Length: 142
Image (tube, rainbow, N blue to C red; front, side):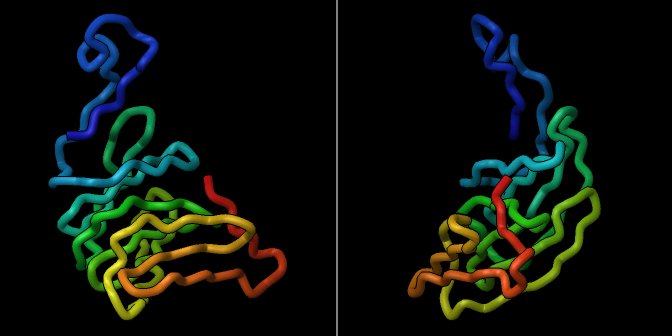
């Protein structure tokens, strides 16, 4: 269960501050990513859920075909997540669109990160650093 809580409330904020709940997640170890009013969260069986951050309305669920133990990252209008089988890149937005599934030679259990215009992805065996080829293709985490 994913709950959106208004932490400014008093008492048992899990009740008094609950704004909305979403019960379509399987087990999850992920934190959420929020960008442009959309919330993205992964569940362990390998699905990405896209919700309206204000209402909890589900826009889409995309199965990426491998267990997910890390969290999603939104940067450069893309959604990045690692799985047991591949590193996945999806278009950020209200419609599901899988852009790529890239084998990195071993599972990706961690959460990708962006720093200094570089996307960092740690697989079980390797650390990958990816930079945009075009000078205007800045990667900026949201």
